[in-house]
Amino acid sequence: MSERYKKIIFVSIIIFLILGFLEISCYILLKLSALETRGRRDWHTYYKNSGLYKDIDIDVFYNEQKIINSNLSFDFYRYYRPMANFEGRYISTDNEGFRKTAQYFKDKKLKKKTIIFLGGSTMWGVGAAGDSTTIASLFSKYLNEMDPEVNYEVRNYGVGGYQNTQEMILLLEKLGTEDIDFVIFFDWVNEAIMGYRELLDGNNKLNFLQPSVNAGYSGIIKFLSDRGVYDEVIKLSTALRWVSEKSSLFKIVSRLKNAIASNAKTRRIENNRGELTRQEQEQAERIVKLYGKNTKIIESLSKTFNFKAYFIMQPNLFTKEKLSSYEEGSPHWKDVKSVNFQRKVYELAKKEFSARDGFCDISGCMATDETIYVDDHHTSVKGNDLIARAILNRIGAEIMRNSKE
Image 1 (cartoon, rainbow, N blue to C red):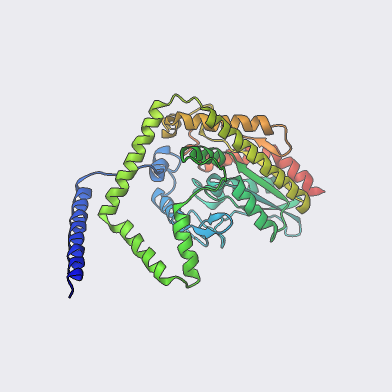
Image 2 (cartoon, helix red, strand yellow; image 1 turned 135 degrees about the vertical axis):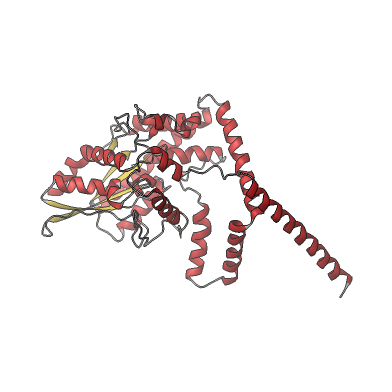
């Protein structure tokens, strides 16, 4: 054996011993300390503390959402889509990953009209413990009860994290395969949140496409795996995933990174007084401008494909006038700049679109001091019911009238 190979083996052994020592040390540190991962929404705690889920098994509901969120699929056009064909106690998805919607058909001989909802996680049903308690399902129930002459088939095409551009791409896909009579966009929370995050990331492109570690990793690996290619890459990826999940050293590094990021964010929050900078003001204006361009494209499509489009302004915690003690204590209030940025986007959007046909502002529909929000915008069946009724009050009569023509 040459001297060169002896040195390589010696160095490799030293590195292995050092990594082994660090791994054992980190394992002991994790066992003795209470280090916690920060920076993510603690859904289990939200569900438990909100008092909105006393009648369900929170552990089961939480785990079902966790499974779905960990198994996103890669999508070339929309970047990612939810887990398909999931069947749980509280959540079920179809073969495309969309949340199943309860249908309330009356007589099969009646005329049928198809309504699709597009939106983000609130529309999909985060917080909805049961497919029949999503906004789309409740809207379907109430609309079919109101009109005895038409069967309304309602489809929930909401996807967590989606913004209007992704929804528009999804609409294009569906118009190629489905006959659609009414399209309801449920927007503005994700547009405002992602627009603000783009500022923090130093990205002002406003592409409205949310990055996703799960989509980028799990989705692409699944895409490659389904086609039986790059087996070695997949094996390496599996090994890396195992290291990320099992290695104590990796866990320590990850948690220290999250702690540093969390502390930096806390300092930024504590030091700001909430006033928007010129850059933030311009960003809010760009969000509204881009949304306006998207609506023009959608309205042009509506004339060609003969559907009616509605644009609903989603309510959230920051538009609720009367707060419960739980809502007042929400950690989301601490980031004053984020709150004020979202409010500015809503203010500009109302000013720009309030007189436009199809635009409906229901952001003030939560006229109660009872707890509605699980976090800053997700709701349980109580909030979903109020939203479904508010949408119905604004556009239900017009939908029924147009369905008779």
